[in-house]
Structure formats: structure tokens, C-alpha cells
Image 1 (cartoon, helix red, strand yellow):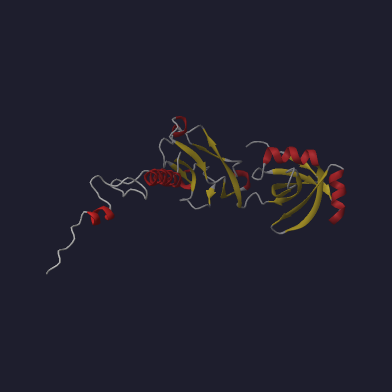
Image 2 (image 1 turned 30 degrees about the vertical axis):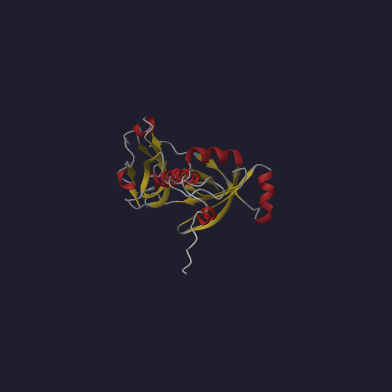
Length: 242
């Protein structure tokens, strides 16, 4: 088993608004909690917490040294600055190494799908983490999924396809899709393109004169047609009866 990272902390007296001063001085505020454990406010050097968090994430066990004892903990509920994303506060969840815990584990992909290299489709990852249950020492740092075999549009990998350790139970619904190959052009885009082409054709048809259309006012008369007045002049007067 890999050696767990160690973080040294001490009891924290600064609470409420006083915590801001701690952060300015490079001290990171946190709390310890757990099943059947009294909550305890603690603090640690920010640079030490940052390095430990980078190594363990939220699924790796940490040996937290505080008050002369070592506690096995997981990092939970990390609050970050909205703009800088710098951690502002965290909880250390103290675990019983003999009891299973539930937590979320990130899913990472390996390789490049053939459908992407052949330019047949787009890769869509719809889930970035899954919920698992395991003994604290068995919790995986991440779940890796190989996607190189995805060849055609519609190919997908579901939760049920994931490979995890024997001591790990995935709690997320097995039918949920993790990654899939989508079409390069969506059906909606195709419909819009077809509608636009039809509109252009209709505009062309309206611009061209219809066959057999009557001449506009002022245009030449049809050959052989006589004006009404000329027809009147050629008409013979009726003979009067004596």
C-alpha cells in the first residue's frame, strides 16, 4: 500500500471574522468532523495544505497530525474563491478504517477514439465523476476509462462498463453514459440548412416571371387585335325599312 501523505495541523482559536486574518498570514482554516467525533476547528500552513490536497485530492487518505495524535482523514467540502479558485476552507472527514465510506471519484479518459482520428464524430463526456463506496484504504484516486475503441457515431461507454477494484462498489446508475461519440453535424443543424436552401429556391422562383403571364399595362397588344373604336367604324349602318 502506498504511503499516505501527512499534514500537520493545530487547534484553531480564531473563528468567524478573525479567520480572514489567518488567511492573510498564510494560515489555512479547517474543521475536523466524523461519525461519533466531536467537531474540532484546526489550522495548517496554507502551502502545506495545498501540496497535500494536490497529492491526495478528495479520495486519498491523509494522516492528519493534531494534538499529539494521528487521524486518518479525507478532504471534503473545499471552499474556493470564486475568481481565483484558491482554497479558502475545508473539512477533514475522520474515518474508521474498518467502515466503508461513500464519496465521489473523478473519471478520466485514456487514449483517443478512432472516430475522432478519422474525423467521423465528436467525443462527448457527460459524466466527470461517479459515486462509489469502499473502505477508506481502498478508495481509488480516480477511475480511468480507455476510449480508443470508440469507432463509430453512437458508440458509448456507460457506468456499467467501468472497471474498478474488487473492494469498490459504484453507486451511480449503471445505465448512465460516461462518454459517447456524437455526430459532427447535428440533426438540428441539418434541418436548418435544408430550410435555408428551400427559402433561397423559393426566392428565385418569385423573382422569375411566370410562363403565360398576361402583359403588364401599357405593353403591346397581341398581333391581329383591333381597337374597339376601329371595329365600330367598319361596322355597316343598319338599313331603314321603308
